Image 1: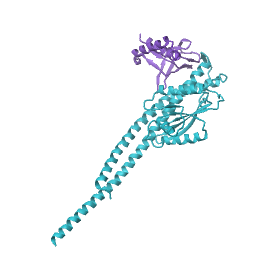
Image 2: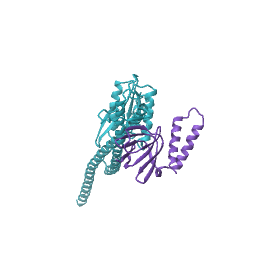
Image 3: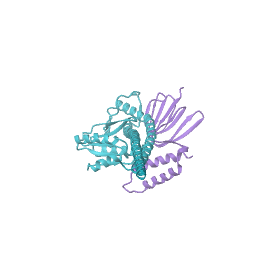
Length: 131
Length: 283
């Protein structure tokens, strides 16, 4: 069977463009495993970890938001941030996680819960890559 | 004729001005290359979003989204994109001239400024500005354009504007910029794209996808406009500084000529004085 082509497009560059065997992405309704021959799909992504399988190798990326489309074995992801493990500043992620938790705990009415929640999820996605 | 020392001082001062304009030209040229690269790198993302929004819109024309429709509000807003810094020729002047004309025709517009020059200009003329984003071109990244985009989106949805347009300099080439007025809201994606008519499954549902796509579309549209504007600004600055350097050259040449003339005249005068003095003694 044909290979999958994976393209990850960021606002300022094309981050990944390669042939892969299999990919697992965090879709908005749960993780999504994509193999060659997948039906055409557009989905929203949630913050989480993307696993890319090429041959014997698995690479992990933290992904924050965006879309994924599949057509004719061509997987395209548009996102504002996709990071590899070595690009992540874990201590910063740690502190932003704590900040977000603090904000969500306090019940001030001026807290922007959606933003706090989003930053909590992003930080969690980053930290999950640590291990 | 001016004093020899005065001419010499002027030559020196013009020389140092020339050095500065020349350096600014070099810096602008380097920045221009950088800005052009960024435009090229931003293209795949923008193309992709455009194509998707078009596909989803055609397939699901019944799924209405507030950002895509006319909301029949009267009030309009106008975004003016200028540079933060001067010394870039007629870059800002062209924008403000056209914007001024547009404002005369539509006096009820609410104005949003991006860039310090336009803000200063309009403030001096007591024109009301409802929002401003200044000093952002120096360290511009995608998040700064996203902040502006989010603000515009919530303005459009909350304040019930019927239309928001934007005026900016489009980058044509290093020596040419075009002033463009474009409608941002309601969103009208370009029509001439290759449309993908595969039967996609939408997760979770088309509305959520459209919602997200339209937000991303505005993000990337603002980003593109800011990049275009900053490339155009650098181009304009490069040309302006190039001709300034040229002019300094010419001035220096002219003044050097004057200087030599004055010096010669002085020597001649001295010789005449000595000669006539010697003559007087001989008599």
